[in-house]
Length: 158
Image 1 (spheres, rainbow, N blue to C red):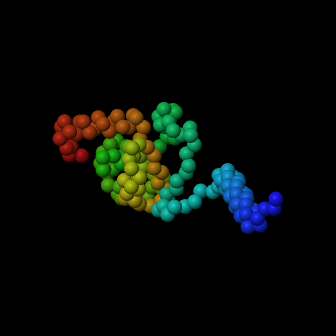
Image 2 (image 1 turned 90 degrees about the vertical axis):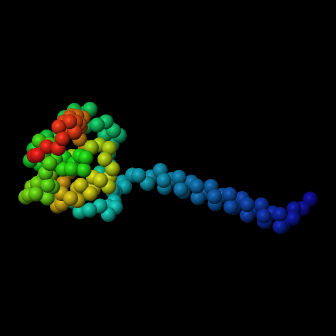
Image 3 (image 1 turned 30 degrees about the horizontal axis):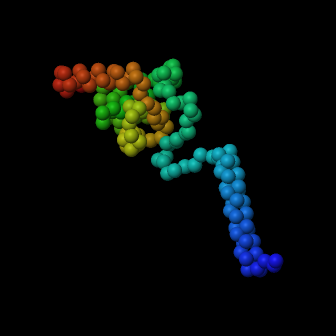
């Protein structure tokens, strides 16, 4: 019994197509498994003086749950909360006037603040060398007390 040559050619082409498909999947798997090794961070058009670093899984817990952070001088700290800038003693300040000639600055924001709001606040401070950090539970409690006192007694004349 002799096979038809057309049928043989079709089976060879199907086998070749399957082999090429499996080879492509194998190459894709090998490339994707090794793509994270030695990868460098890339810039995504952030304003000058702003850097973004990847966090490790251990950074999931809030800073105050892991213990004390890096101490910051009250003259280097500005808090952005409720749409206003505050000094370390929770008095309203003008961000441009507050900056003065300072080179090292820390902008503290509420942990749930959205990226656009934080970047707008960062831009209003101006310059470079600004570190953005989240407020811990103690600062948030102080800000809640300030807001409660402000609403109970009306706006202050500071």
